[in-house]
Length: 402
Ligand SMILES: Cc1cc2nc3c(=O)[nH]c(=O)nc-3n(C[C@H](O)[C@H](O)[C@H](O)COP(=O)(O)OP(=O)(O)OC[C@H]3O[C@@H](n4cnc5c(N)ncnc54)[C@H](O)[C@@H]3O)c2cc1C
Image (cartoon, rainbow, N blue to C red):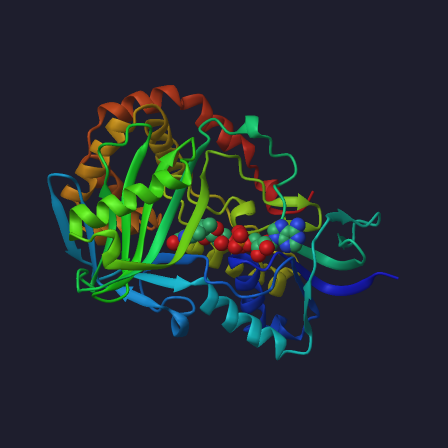
């Protein structure tokens, strides 16, 4: 007979473990929950960063916080103190250790290290079934971050952009970094296939994580990212290859897509995290949006016994994302110019509020009027049908399993 749980979390990454942690902190802690992942060993392979007003999530294991944010172009250098939204860095290993330790200590939450091979619905439609190579488990709901949402075809994505990057965690033989300031974007104008920039998270004056990041369709060869990083260390800090030690490489590919919003994997399984479309298309940032999704799921389970679907972003924010994707995809030089004007003409707190989708329409208009408008007129015209398609792809009935 299948083993039964109240809920199953399939995939113990940022989304799965955030949800498990949220359940542990709520009255759902008395439910029986199974958390399954192919690999449950904590790893220092992702540095999740985000801006946040107030106390950040997982504040006790935040690795570093910055109150100054820098943006650099070949000609200019903008450095701003942030008052409302500090910028935080959380290492995946610290987050995983914290959550896994708490889960292991809780007798109603079980951890299973195994591959998930399929997620189906019970013929009664009253439960979902999780399949591993050798076992089958049932639960009233499964929250999954393992599989692409069913029904999502590549052809559904008009602008298949990716944020791809490789970074070095390094220690230099002398003090070169300003530990109080992270560098959000130091643009590389020599890159023409998309928008590329360096991203620097200094841990202290000698060590930090430096990533070469690109918004484009096509990934680069590993050596291309490495050459860019070595060149940057030389040109900006005067460091030769013998002046620093690289202790770790971090790489990633994050979708920046105008994909339709597909909340349900099947009638009893919800898509969470990146698979749930939580990544903000124009920035790639996901971690904070995952925390909002967790809140909605738990609220729904507690109030109605059905997980609440996080509504997709308001239409106007989806439109801004779509227009920027269009410009990044078709006119990357114009996109660079937009970024320059954005950072030159606005306070960082206002930009973060806008990217968080917490801004008012008046604040949006102020930001929009600070950047070149011609590329936006073209984007608005060229992507008008797409916006309508994306709007129609989500109906209020998606809030409930079909
Ligand atoms: C290197 C990197 C850095 C990032 N940095 C940031 C950042 O700074 N800020 C930000 O907001 N976002 C960032 N992101 C984007 C996003 O926040 C992360 O990708 C985040 O990890 C997404 O969480 P998730 O749970 O959806 O996916 P994941 O964290 O990838 O979790 C999915 C889990 O499912 C498991 N799994 C998958 N398939 C199976 C299967 N068949 N069987 C069993 N287990 C399976 C995997 O082992 C994994 O543990 C980053 C992404 C990467 C790759």
